Length: 279
Image (cartoon, rainbow, N blue to C red):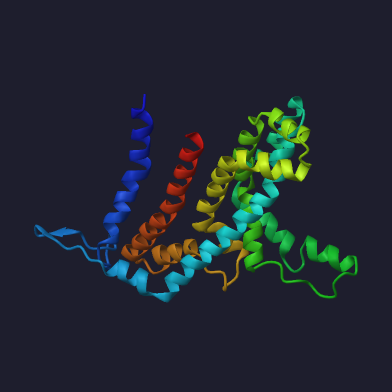
């Protein structure tokens, strides 16, 4: 029974990653494909120059750091917004939960690209938000809402919020309500019950939701490209530029492998937390 998921992971994840890893040790050349073979004339022609460039070039380091910062901010905001939503859905009457969960996942029925274009219409200088603020007399000239880091964070929170809400709801919905009632009977105030009972028991959902938001945000390309400005440099945009504009596939592959290695760390932390909770 375990053979099918292992085969699925091997074909759709490990095999493509192995191909990218192989390209990362090649050299760039003008031709098809745009990189040299690793074995030529029976000799190994691998190089570590691409990884040296990734680790020593301040531009790539800045792109990684900016991606991690923006993804971390988006994850924290998604948690602050998603936790109350998940808690409210878990405490709602059972006959309403299905409808509320449907409303959470409803944006997935529309293409992400179309939804981000809608945000462009809302945030642009002549968009709905600026027009509304001007009509209310709150501003004299349009605010710069688009092509900013804040717009990128807003787009990421909007796009990945369901990935935060659903794991949290699954954890909160299974929580025994008698635990909160017992804490209340012992004299704990509501905020104390939340901090001492609800929040600790929901930590696996918090960690799972945070990783489900943080990991795709780090490598996001569409949202930074459409809502971000020239100052918003993220590794997803850098990868696209290196692959399709510069056609430097070996360097792009090295950037990709480095990004995967960086993201493995929070995944291992998640497994450690979940194992600790299970034991």
